[in-house]
Image: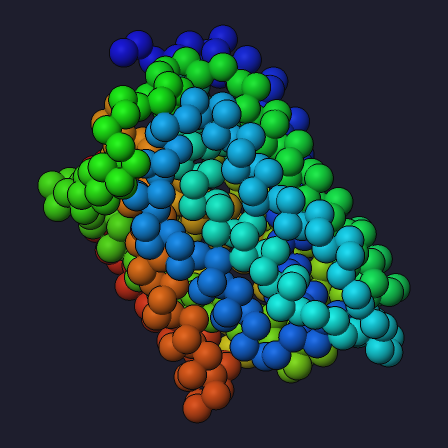
Length: 414
């Protein structure tokens, strides 16, 4: 099938950038979720690990769950997923929160809040393969990196605004949880509606599949997912590299909310200078610079470089003792995650044959579910036995191993 023309890419961009604003508004809120649960609702210290695991463990069956969306027109699936993921956020307007002290401290039914956030994250396991298939369908490979950089730029700019506004409100009064997160839910619903209005150039995910029964689709999709890993050697090696990165990342990333709250004792204002400014601003700059060069650099080589930077981030984090140093290091983290997310989102498209993007992306998500079962609990246990800085050091080594793996693959597929 012919590649989509620049005209189709330009049409898609005109429609999609508006949806990406909403993506960033939701991202600003979800990025603060673990910190908010501990600071403003009095959630226990294991909350970040629980939130990560409960939200992403459904991705273990992503190839099977993806089969359900095949029974719907993809544009209709966007609508239903948007409602299912974001309506729980709207219900937080009724969340009872009691202020206790300055800088957003409070207590409330944190389990209710976590339930809403888990629904949002878990349903990404269905949304992301559809979104990736749309990008593959409407953006030619020669321009995909450039447009993905623009998409990231729009969403990250909105993330900065959302996160800083949320930090300002919550620092003033923790009861703004009942306003900030429902507004994010409205933005999420609008996001899905806008992206559902985009016409597809290809039909790989636009039309419902032929009906062979729900459980038949589920079984066939799981079987197809595992067979992809078995027969596509380069994709399998790429996923091994991402598995090593993911294990290291997930050991340490959930510890950062507790590290901010209990060790560095950051206010919302200080935390959002890192999470809501340093990270998205540097992410934006790198995505806009690297995205257009992706066809020349290669997505695998960019992934390798990002893993190397992330390894340096974790080893540096082991020595952070001040809020200023934490914020400064998050500028490095943002630059790193721009490369990681280019590889995470566009890498499976690099290996997938035409019409198989959703299947490859579903396998990609499945392996996130595999590592989420192990890594956060391992990191939490090691932090209690040896200390959080030690976990950061271990993560640095494991992520560096992922960089070596993808670096060797980059030489093969260059």
